[in-house]
Amino acid sequence: MKDFVNVGLLGAGTVGGGVLKVLEKNAEKIAKEVGKPVRITKVLDRHVDRLKQEYGDKYIFTDNADEVLEDKDIDIIVELLGREHPAKEFIARAFANGKHVVTANKDVLAKYGAELFPLAHEHNCDFMFEASVCGGIPIIGPMKTSMAANQITSIMGIVNGTTNYMLSKMANEHLDYDEVLKEAQAKGYAESDPTADVGGLDAARKITILASIAFNTRFNLDDVQVEGIESIEACDIKYATDLGYAVKLLAIAKNDPENGVSLRVNPTMIPLSHPLAGVNGVYNAVFVNGDAIGEAMFLGLGAGRLPTASSVCGDIIDIARNMQHKSTGRISCT
Image 1 (cartoon, rainbow, N blue to C red):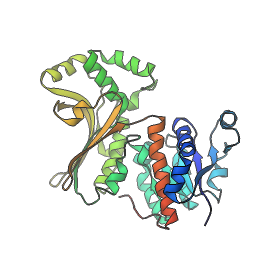
Image 2: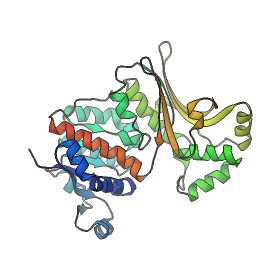
Image 3: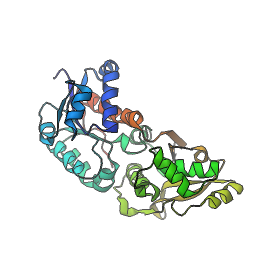
Image 4: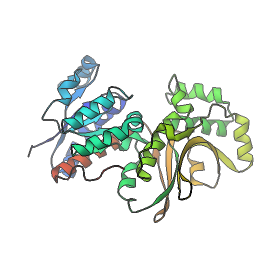
């Protein structure tokens, strides 16, 4: 048995930097939780010189993926590169080399999950991805463990902070779509090209992941009906408010015994008395209905450096604990 659990980090940007910070700050507590220290040994990033200036010689930085993926001493690969490629290929190589993987990459999971999960199972590796949906909100873990005895009938969520911020602003300050989009971009809540957020694609990826777990079936993006918020006007929200409703971009998955499963993302009028109606700003929330638990809601920050890093580090700790007890690959997905 090694004295450390060694982690290779792919990507030291916003979230990756947060992971470095959390693992360093809480190193003593994490070591007690796991039973031995957890340490980042190598970091893959394009900006090696900048990172060396920032972190000194605390970590080994490289721009060569082979140095991380082929390192026999590394136990866990944490993929935080974003986008589909080469992240998908790196994850597959990690499994082929017998390494466990933590990712926050919803793009890869929504499109290539059906290919990657069997690879993880084949090589007896853990594959964890709590941070891929709703950042710091624990929802995937509870669905796979605490709610595993339930038949989940529906999931309804505000899973995109950008659109929730925009719709909240439009409702509270009676502003037009174009005004709030510019403000969201100025504050860093929206990208310069906001299409994935305002068009509903980001939320569609997330509901694909959640529905796959909840309904034990591998869905993909083509299974989701998607409508964004681009056509919503201030007057629409005012009319809804007057009628006692809030307008939210909801990602919805339903399992109907007669009609099967339906997945969709669209602007939705929900009663002001519903818990989701009061979720404003950049907050996310997921509302789950199960036959045993009834109704449960998970609320928190759906993005951000440290909230997302919190979920990533939680997955690292779970895998490290499994390694200690030789129980990796114990909880499969779908």
